[in-house]
Image (cartoon, rainbow, N blue to C red; front, side, top):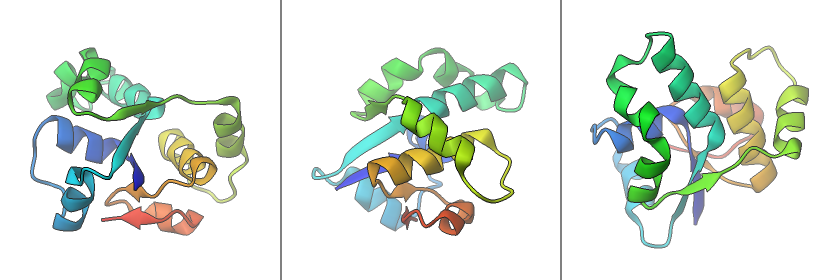
Length: 128
């Protein structure tokens, strides 16, 4: 299985917090699961740390590539197709980070590990 982490799920994994459900944890721990982390999540974490909205993730923002590799996750760059899809997504959801994750999940046919039900509105399979 291949899955995409949303930003909160990445933070919880990286900071070893127990916010993930058993279903999400099982999917992530399976040896058969390839876990992708979007470049959009790095952008979101760095932005929120800079704005003082995510002070608990200062170290993660500074070392995100190293942390992602240490966790055995795979980087998912943002392509032109992903950006175009995000910009063209219907609906009034204004969060640019979520819109990019939705577009990537759709384009790459990846379920997303997330507690956020907004992904359901965009026909993205959500694991939680």
